[in-house]
Length: 190
Image (cartoon, rainbow, N blue to C red):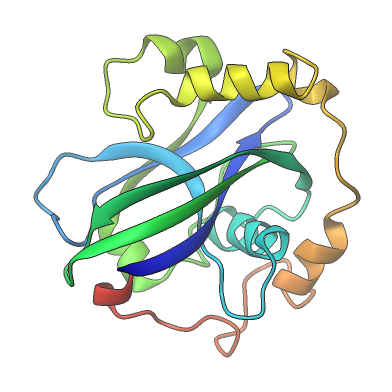
């Protein structure tokens, strides 16, 4: 079976809200949208933390995010246009001042299949009737925070200053990545 390691980011703002995207899988574009964390695939030669920093910048444009610890790891099988794909999801905590995310760094595939982005309060997320992936995301966040020693996401110690990672991910550019840094990934690989 094909495998795809990913860096999923639990990005919290200063109001303790988490940023989620709503989108559809390329393998089933007519399906209803599902809310999920920002993040994506770990590229060859990249660490999970480097991938998380790159994904934060590419998907939001934020350069002020600070990476925290790994909250949890899980494996899930989903199908794309090619067939079954084993996702090896690393969920990392990160903090940002928040604001309105920029879509400037998005690939064509993201523009086509991502319908919305918004900040969610954890209590709102727990009560939502909308489709959320993973379905127990609010519970997993609460369990991870307790395991890390706090029910307050802002009391979790950062694993270090991530700004060098974010600067490296953006090649020092605040506006957007240079085209040579971003490569288009055919839909069948996404």
